[in-house]
Image (cartoon, rainbow, N blue to C red; front, top):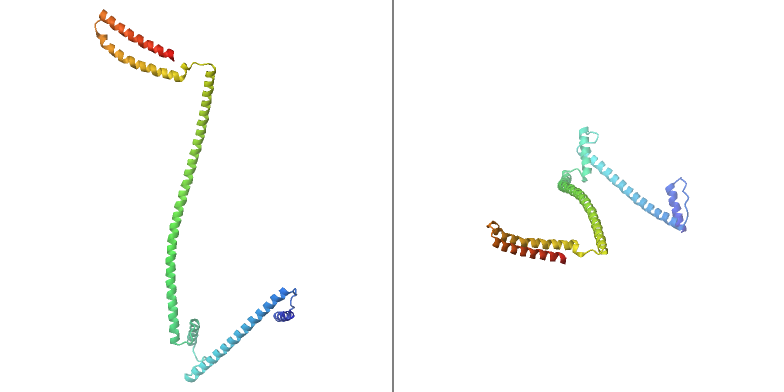
Amino acid sequence: MCEKIKKVNSWLGAVFGEQVVPQFEVNTRTVDILYQLAQSSEARCSDTALLIEDLKQKAAEYQAEGAHLQDVLLQSVGLSSASLSKPVADCLSALVDNAMVLGVRDTSLGSFMPAVNNLTSELLEAEKSNRRLERELRALRKRLGATLVLRGSLQEDINKTVKAQAVESAKAEEKLLKMDFVTAKANELSNRRERSEAQLVSRNMDKSITHQALVQLSEEVTELKKEIIPLKKKLEPYMDLSPSPSLAQVKIEEAKRELAALDSQLEMNVDFK
């Protein structure tokens, strides 16, 4: 614990320098957290220092190589950076910039061509990928358009269905109201009929004058009238004959007997009812 506190205080002093180190609560958890931060900071600082040293070494190597190349140019060709014209210096600077962008070792044609070919291949692949993405985008737009059209059609169908449902609901409600009215009216008529029948029963009404009995009697009268029609047709041929007292008397008597029989039967039926 004491070793950790010493290391934490040393690290905080190095971090804040001449500034006052803020006060903090000294406990196991706080010390452990600060100790881990101190270790991480020292490891990062160590890595950074190594990286800086490596970059310094590479810079020194590049400077030495540049000086060597400058000496070679000066000794073999008699050229120096000061003796170059501005266009030539600009071209050399652009050549160096291109070499740095392409990441080649030197500015020779053998280094530039593979790098340019690689960039060309990457460009072709990018264009190919771009065309593929454009095709997919067009297909997606087409599907999106069809989906929007279908959505509009479905929405229109839904609106029509809702309106039709509202109309049918109104009709159904109206039918229910009419049905309720008819049911109430039927119940009222049934109650009135039952009350009327009860009144008739209480007054000892003759069943022969009920509606059903009268209907049956009317049917029987109709049947008897149908039976009279053939008899009348039998009498029609004799209506044009010259009157014969004896024959007419006979026919009259026969007709009277048949008529009396029918009247008697009719009276019997009426009395029976």
